[in-house]
Each structure stands twice: as structure tokens, then as C-alpha cells.
Image 1 (spheres, rainbow, N blue to C red):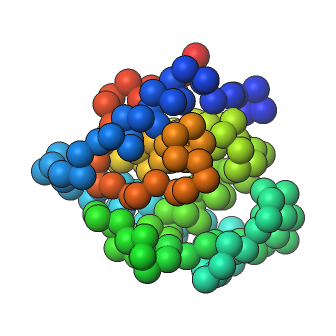
Image 2: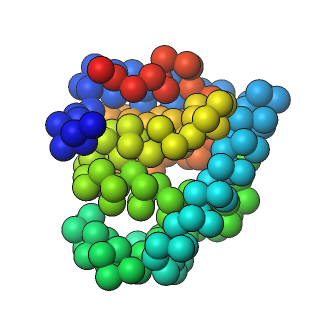
Length: 176
């Protein structure tokens, strides 16, 4: 797949963003189950990642651009902005959330060659979401496509509150 050609949809993006922002914070048993699967799959991806690069978690955003991150990864190093205490996820432990940030930066952004713009985030979601199975893929989509759509189209420049929800099935389908 040519990730350089993937762009965020200007109709679907705001729709997904609104769904995320307006979603009830009520956590369903299905969401709990999906996030357990998601956390387990993230842990496995992280175990593989640390065989490729040294990961360091930072209290500050370590990169001004994706290109800075790409240069570090090419040298065998990846710095990841650790989850701030005030941004706890309702279904993920801080360490699980941090591991997800690491694997998404590597498997999504680095391996797709795309930046942190709305189009780069869409490409990173497409690339990385294919590594998840079952309901974990829907949780991953909520964590990436859902939050990014909210950030890029609805809540700019504020990062939206993290939620333990599952967006509708159609949001997880990779566009043709």
C-alpha cells in the first residue's frame, strides 16, 4: 500500500471527530473486553519494538517534527512523550498507554513515513490498525482515528479527553 497517498477525508474526519467528542463516557463491558485485547496486543508489539530500537519515555514532547523522530529511529532510538498524570486513560494503565504511544509512533508513523498532520495520522492509523485483530482493532481505531479526528477537526488545538469507548464499526474500516 502506498501510504504517501492517504489523506484524511474532509467529510468523514469531522463526523468521526464529533462521534468521539459527543460519545458518552459510560464504559460498556464490550469496551472493557476490547481494551483488554488491545492492551495485550500492544504489549506484544512493544516486546517486538524494543528488539529494534531503544525506547525512552520523556516528560516533555521530544520531537518538534516527525522527521526528527525518523532520524532518531534510523539511529536505533525512539523517544516517546509519556502520558501526563492528568490525562489518565479510563481503561489503560499509564504504562499501557505509553507503550501504545511508542508502538504507534514506530509502526504507524515511522513505517508509513508519515508525519503528525491530519493526513499523516490517517496514514499511520491505516498502517498500524492492520496489526490488530478482533475488537482490539476497534479500540485502536478509537485511540487513533477517533482522537485524531476530534483533535484535527473539532477540538483544535486541545487534545480531547481520553475515553474508554468503541466507535461504530464503520469507523474501523480502511477506506479504499
